[in-house]
Structures are given as structure tokens and as C-alpha cells.
Image (cartoon, rainbow, N blue to C red; front, side):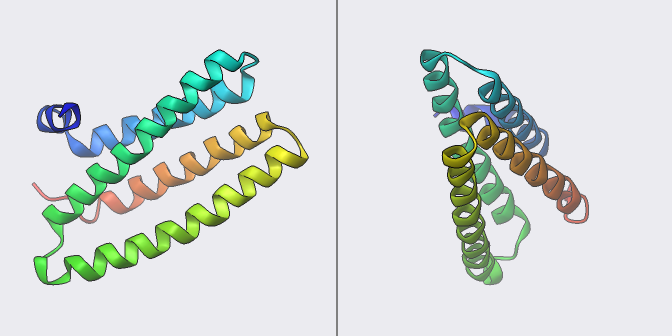
Length: 129
């Protein structure tokens, strides 16, 4: 309900970029955080932001990609997404175990920076009016 309201009144590309930036900031804050109670809240926010990014991107994909190709595009996107999630999650978890949680959150913020740069790079060629 809230997502529908937000997407209706805000530019989708700007909203996605804002959410990426918000995730990057949360990752940086978590790397500096020392309080468990705050960490729980920050991680909860991260858990809310990432599905919103994915949902808005899927919605935008449905607006751009012809319906005859939509199934193949979404299946391919999900395949790539799952592979990247597996390696990123494994890597972040391993770093958190071996080096410390703060470094895992720094890597998380770096992955989100990479994701935002990829998004900025691919959104321009496919922008529709």
C-alpha cells in the first residue's frame, strides 16, 4: 500500500537511486555502529529497502520490455540476481566471521555502490518518456 503511493507520486528512477544511496548510508552506519539495539533497527530498514528496489525495478522492466520477451528477461534477471546474491552473501558472511562485522558492512555498502553505478549505466539507454 505504501509502496504503491510512493511509486505513484515519485519518479521511479530517482526513487531507485535514492534507495540505493539510503542502503549505502545504512551499510556505512552499520560499519561504525556499536549498539545492538540500533543495529537491529538498521538491519530491519535494510530488509525493507532491498525488496522495494527489486519491486520497482521489475515494475519498470514491465513498462519497457515487450510482453513477448518479459518472461525470458525476468527469468534471466532472476538467475543473475541469485548468483550475485549467493556470492555476495557468502563473501560478506565470510568476511564478518574472519575479520569482523564492520568490514562486512563496508563490503555490503560497496556492493550497493556497484549496484547503483550499474543502474545509472543501464537506465539511460532504456529511458522512455
